[in-house]
Image 1: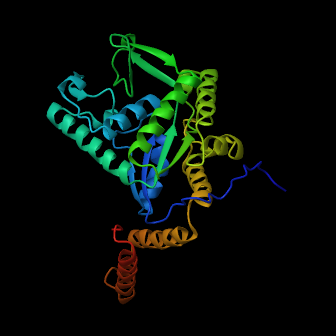
Image 2: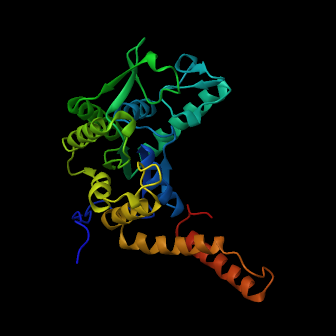
Image 3: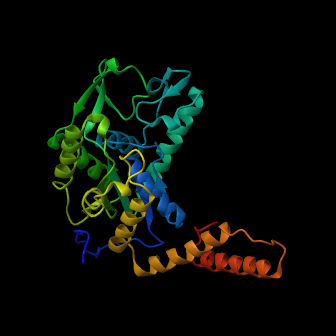
Length: 314
């Protein structure tokens, strides 16, 4: 008896991910969940250098600046609540030093630019179609940094506006890297602070817009649909009932693997996991002969893997 209605996923036949692949992951906090898996399994990946970016406009701004090799200057940052902030970046980049914030912003722009140029895969996860515009400048921000709400207008991007933003993202990437596969996905995290109906409308706008830009090099992975349909139970959510829990994240990650990973990459992932688990092992007697033999075998496993894939380090 089946207790789920499962989404049919087709194995990706072109440009699958292996350990020679170079990945960039940008977007909402769900991008961080999946990105952390790539890091754990020692893929060559870059994850959200500007922190969590929830909507297309924020991602478009950062990518455009990085690809055009622009620089942040004093006029792009502001001081509030004893820290310097930038409207284009998440608050985790905020700093008590203006100079340090600017250095971090520009260093990360350069990092994105370099990785985009060499990337084989760019995974972009969109969280919401709701954006905040600064009233005084009518500019869209990535993060409000807890400034008073009366300084912003909250706006729902139309399907056409999202489509245009996505097309700009694609065009900018393709201008420097025509061979990269771009994978869009919609975060299953529910933004209920916007309201139940408003959240549904937001996700619908994102999904509709994404499907208007797909082609043989632009792909969609149904993270949102897997969570909403296959995992339609609150036991797959964290205690806030909004974010997928670890079980759900692993489930969706495994679905992603079945579509995008080569069989050889799958085998290497198993080797990496065995080493990762071995490094966490806590012996009863660290001086025992058995444990020393275990450590020797672990080191040999590391060296064997590192000789095959030079970028891997533990």
